Length: 290
Image 1: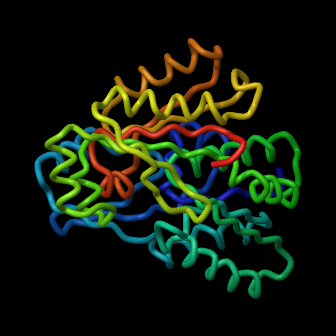
Image 2: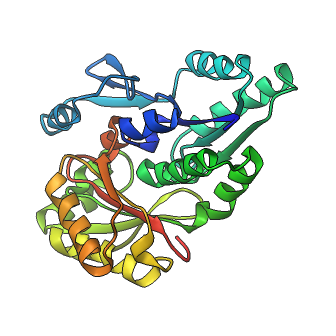
């Protein structure tokens, strides 16, 4: 592989996967009661259970983009080593991360005219973004060129299904996704939304059900209806906001139905988790359409 894959911490990949493919991660940041933290630090595992406990305790959490100077330093290190760069980024429909990083890369193209520099907006988030990064890394490892890999991501980003549910609408209200009255009424009535990411990279409520189990089964049914065959051979990713038992329940349903051998799950990172809260559960797979 003669090029490097760069993403950001919102891709939510496991540290082992990042290390296996030597992926460069640009960390978004979050603040808890005024103290700033990086959402990803290479070689250091954040205690994400503790992070979600802080949300439950009512801590004030805000988020921000990657530090542009740090991003520039990380990417120029690759370019100075003679590496070409493919950046696969967090949805521009949810964050300014892609816009800021792609602008930086356009400037670096002028400074490094001999290098190939590509960037692509996944219009995705969490392990939906991460699944595209993972597939691209597998292609690169197997000998695909940077152009072939870039084109595959472009061709498949709108086939990467993102299905979400949350445990409390209160956190979506805090993030500006639902009204305060809707959040209050929904939580009182045990209403759970089933949402997906649309082609513009926005998180869209599709319908509501009463009860947690129904919302999880609703995501599973969307996979039944839309996943690309052969479904059992797909790599499937799941993320959770400190509700690993629910992630395991969903993974078991998928295994029982199709026998998938490669199902992986991880925590939702702090930047996304701050906006959707504990109990978030998300399912990602390749589908006929999002």
